[in-house]
Amino acid sequence: PAQPPLPPTDKFRHMFPAQLIKDAAMAHKVSRLLAPQGEGGADKALVVCGVGHSGYSHGVPERIERALPWLAGRSFRVWCLQAHESADLRGAEPVRELLTDAFGESAFAADVASRPAELCLAFSEAPPPP
Image 1 (cartoon, rainbow, N blue to C red):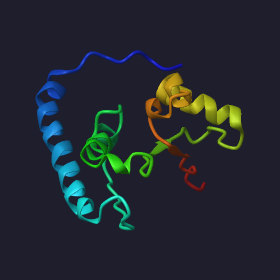
Image 2 (cartoon, rainbow, N blue to C red):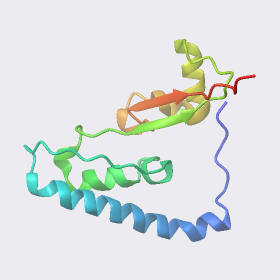
Image 3 (cartoon, one colour):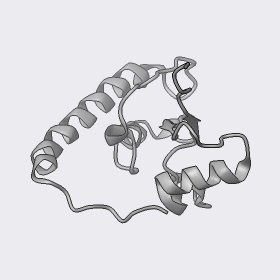
């Protein structure tokens, strides 16, 4: 089952302001690239960043959508989730259990904006050959 969050460490407390600046800088750059095309534009952007910059509904995607509201509904987050090598990823129930362990019930929230991502790629590494 999902564990309650741990209190932030001193290292995180020192890193957090820098992370916010990086979030703002990434969102600003993407917004400046996409803004000139306007709502009808066909250009696309791919922003690759870690979970700390894209998860928890307060990262780069939300900042971009605040700057360019017309992008709401036209963007999505993709998370890659490594499962244990023995995890069964072939059935709906085992995958649901994996996602619930990783994200809690928010992974299946009725409110799509509350979900950690619109798409989650779950994978496991094959054991090394004998």
